[in-house]
Image (cartoon, rainbow, N blue to C red; front, side):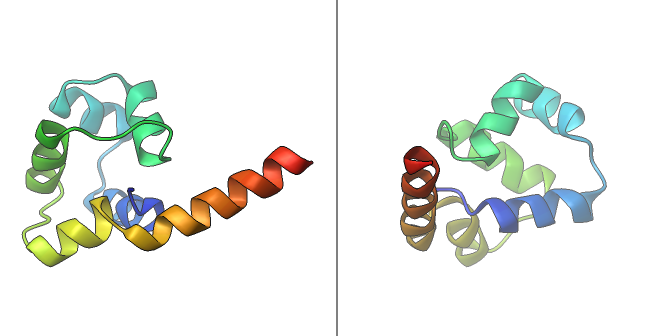
Length: 85
């Protein structure tokens, strides 16, 4: 799953607006928002495009952002708490 905090940090540092990023990777702003927040997954092309656009050059950094296994537990626990309320 995507590490939302790390990705948002990279986006903020880039200075780009979500609408600009979405346009560059070929999706709507709403779809980008959904993907950033783990409501739908990024595909390979989108990940490659984001890495290029946001200057994510290290394979390690790419894995930390787009394939963070620790996020699974955090997201699932948060969803369970939200569903119970």
